[in-house]
Length: 593
Image (cartoon, rainbow, N blue to C red; front, side):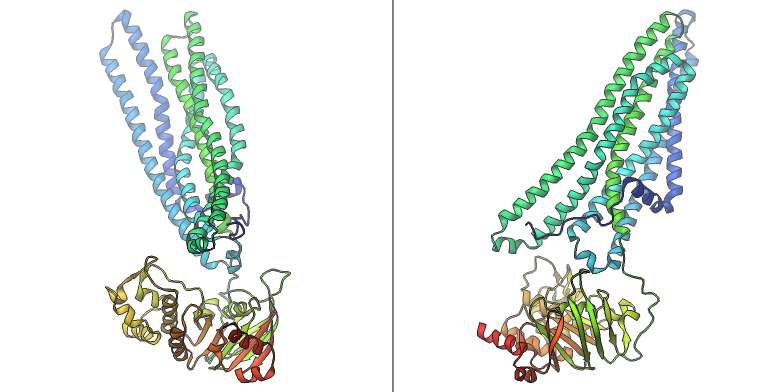
């Protein structure tokens, strides 16, 4: 639907030349294998070039034998030699192809591995502006396009160039007039080929970008299919799909059309070369300048001369596609990463859970601050509730506490140590987290609950599930905790939330963040979850973001945020007596009911 998705963007556009240079650098571990493959291709091409000369000798021997007697032994040896040449060339070509295929598959594996690692080093602000579907398209479509086209184009291009140069030299060594005839008839093919390459490059680039847009749209529409149907936005979703599909069709059609012109046109040039060589050759033979065997060899040479032109044209078309894919892949790999925190060695001597926000200022956009001047001190073991209108900056404060984003100014300290001086992984390890958006993956219930945690016993898993009231349900499943949980599993939103709460309990981190953790459960389940939350937060510093203010009445400190600032703070009773924003928010919920 228009306006729902973020467009695919090339954040750091790369041109064809720079993407190919990046590719050459990336292929460095396999340079030796590629060189071997190219050498084998050269050997195969060289043998292919020798064969027509042997054919000419064979033809001349037969022609001479018509008057003096045919030398069957010599002809037999010539045929065997030609046979060995073609067999040897074919074997070398097969080995070269096998080597190149192996290298390109390793390249695909390495690129996907690099992208996977790169994603974990990317700041969250990148994902705020680029769709998940577009990133998926780079991992799948662009990497596949890059490796598959390079696999066929590099060998083809090298063989074509070598064969073209070799044939040209041999032709001139045989007869200059016939050589000029063959080259002259093919010159128009060169001009056409380079003009098509120049024209089609932008369409290959557009094709890969539009493919990323398509993947992004499909991923969003299918993941939110129920919402699209419920809100009657099917027509809008179809219209947006039609628009993106139309753009993809247009760019793909143009790129494939220009690419498809190469082969038939070069075929026509080849046939034209045959005719020219036959006409000129016949005239030279009648004048006694050349022998009949030269015509036979030149007919073969014309084929060998025009074939590499076709191969070069085909390889150039494929390289345009590879270059467009490479621009997106290497553009992503060269995106700005999170700053290196390997030098951040600070860590609290003893983690008690004291957290200090000191004049924190932050915004997602440079000119739009979300947090203006946030200050607060949280004592060890306290339950801190953060409330306020939507957009007040509650979730942003949690993101900053987890160091998902870097502060504009100010400081956040955990037990006196600024989190900017700690490794991000160390900061993350101090917190368990339950968000309003549940995330479960395809795996067993046990794997989902112990996610990211090692050496967790079955008793710990069951204890956590009992605390949130999910143990009985899971034990009724066919395989209990070993039952595979997938998208087809009929779990309610509340049950999914309970599983993520159990995951946080198993994590057993010194501090807890609960972001609307009870937003998806009914009133009865909420009471059960509240009991589990009490056990989860007992003895731990906890930060609770809640719109249901009835769930945070027992908080040690309630921070009321408005437009990025703390406008009120205190306990539930103190804030009600203050007759401020908190009281307005609290009683508005009962009035709504």
